Image 1 (tube, one colour):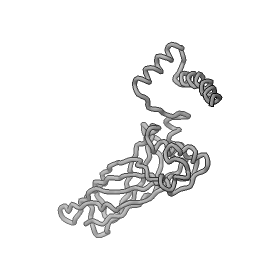
Image 2 (cartoon, one colour):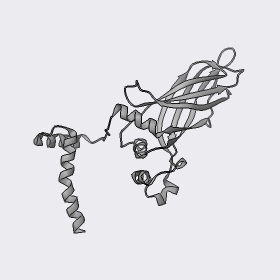
Image 3 (cartoon, one colour):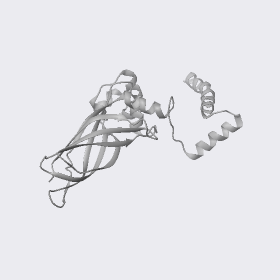
Image 4 (spheres, helix red, strand yellow):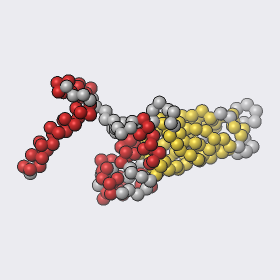
Length: 218
């Protein structure tokens, strides 16, 4: 079996990508006497929220994911971030390769909600590897990448925020069912509102007195 080790030497945002994209610089090390002709690699990325601390404000914003802080001992479970595949060219000894990870800002996705809740510090990630190695001095020897191959990396919150701000400056995204969008569009048209922001703000303004009235009744 081809012995492979993995480490992440850098993580950065791609400033030229069409959408939010992170690039993980991956270093792959093999036995120096073994020629790896190609490596079909699969990488699963997980967030490990228990591996960092949180401010009071961050904790409040994370309530919808993990519940009250009193429950965090059992609820701070790993969150799947992404799964990507990369074809690594042939090498001997050691090589570096970029693992490109497209990112979402859809707040229905747990990872996006987690990232948005953080103010500063690092995001603890674990990269887990599998796949197939094609190696051998003459011809091909096909061996699987062992399932226990992994490496930890910390993604600065600053990098995530700068990446999102580049593509969605000052904005967020909500995914809504088609009939709700149709209703919002009809409401916007009837009121001749100039934007979706104005539409939502008008609805919030109309809802606030009703909320205050209900609270007063209690």
